[in-house]
Image 1: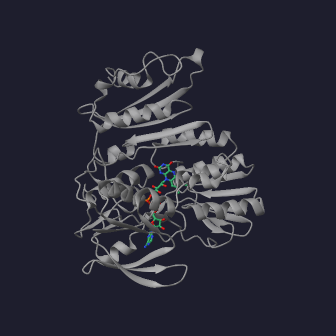
Image 2: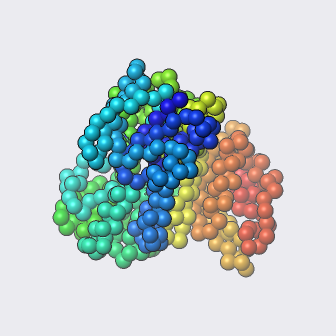
Image 3: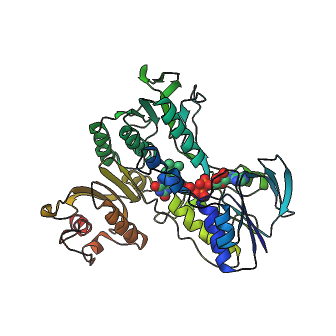
Amino acid sequence: MRIIIIGAVAAGTSAAAKARRNGESHEIVIYEKDTYISYSGCGMPYYLGGEVENGEELTPRNPEFFKSKYNVDVLTAHEVLSVDPGKQSLQVKNLVTGEVFEDHYDKLILATGAAAAVPPIPGRELAHVFTLRNINDMYRIRAYLDTKSPKQAVIVGTGFIGLELAENFVKQGMNVTLVEMLPQVTPGLDSDMADMVESHLEKKGVLVLTGSTVEEIREKDVRISQDREVKADLVILATGVRPNVALAKTMGVALGSTGAIAVNAHMETSLPGVYACGDCIEQFHVVTGKPVYRPLGSTANKTGRIAGHNATGGDLEFRGVLGTGIFRVFDLTVAQTGLSTTEAEKEGYEVSISHNIKPNKPEYMGGREMVIKSVADKKDGRLLGVQIVGEEGVDKRIDVFATLITFGAKVSDLVHLDLAYAPPFSTTKDPVLYTGMIQE
Ligand code: FAD
């Protein structure tokens, strides 16, 4: 059987590795139009800030690695131009030589990912304006930092990528302005939790302009709504991503209501023998069961593995997402899982909310307070979502909450958890248990 995979970052390479583990006899080929493969895109902001010193640490694997370890052929700088599902054939262009050739498949896996969404702001084509999606983008920004030593950075968008970059640019000695269209930073968090993030950014010297849009980017500044002008010799557009679905569309693969590729729990698309995984697909939410688009590396790896398994005759099922996410911004860790209050109310839940402020460990061990906001269904006490902002120990608690929500826990269950305790790690009653006590 010949398996063709399109895209070689998180989802495509996970699919290939799993497909190979399932059998030695399959031919597995990945086409990737970029030059880097299987990289840690999530580490890119830390390379730009100097925390990761060598960019190559983010790209430890190359086609030779996949050939020798998995007997998988990865062809980089090869773009798949079109697919004919009737003939099970595809047209591929070698981007180095310009040669176009035909290949065929028995099973096809689309792992085409996502691309940075670029708003149509006049001036977006100027040389000091960048997006950060892949390793080549990262090196382009690095080269600009090294040759031009910019001092005034404007970052448009305050999702996790925008905020991670803000921290890293401040660490590089730049003045940073964040511009956000919405009335709060970190869309996705409830506004009371987002306020804490905004205050922290301001404390660290970042100028935060919410409720503002960039109207024009010029050589030395940007023009922002309400006739405001901010100096800028570096502009980053961190305004979200869009799934790469052009190829899927022309093949006749059905898209879902979010605009990403629709797949079932087996990662099968609407066309027989064609699977899809990673940032190009729509997922469903564990709490609501409804379609959502949450492009994350954690999910891309998982769905890639499922696609690779099922394309080789297996029967793995995807169980959905909670949109669990975490990021660091200066001294704060910000994390969320499940539904925010706004999302829960939009879904028609009558919610019960608690704010729980507790240290991650005893004061005598240097404990630092975190704020845990929990959202539960008033009707039956089912936990719907949690957001946490704090300095230490946030990562551990958010994963406990994600597990609880996944298995349908009620707030009354929390106090019964037998969580680990010793002074260097926690308090006798862990902050998770307190959350249950407050909600009771
Ligand atoms: P992609 O990484 O988009 O890869 C798809 C590949 O397909 C691309 O290389 C593209 O060139 C190729 N391709 C598309 N069309 C074709 C074609 N026609 N022919 C050939 N090749 C094609 N996620 C987290 O979970 N946690 C984090 O902390 C986190 N941090 C991030 C930080 C940054 C700065 C960025 C940019 C992303 C971050 N992510 C994070 C998201 C994570 O990187 C993505 O979810 C992940 O890369 C998705 O992998 P993918 O393989 O589905 O898609």
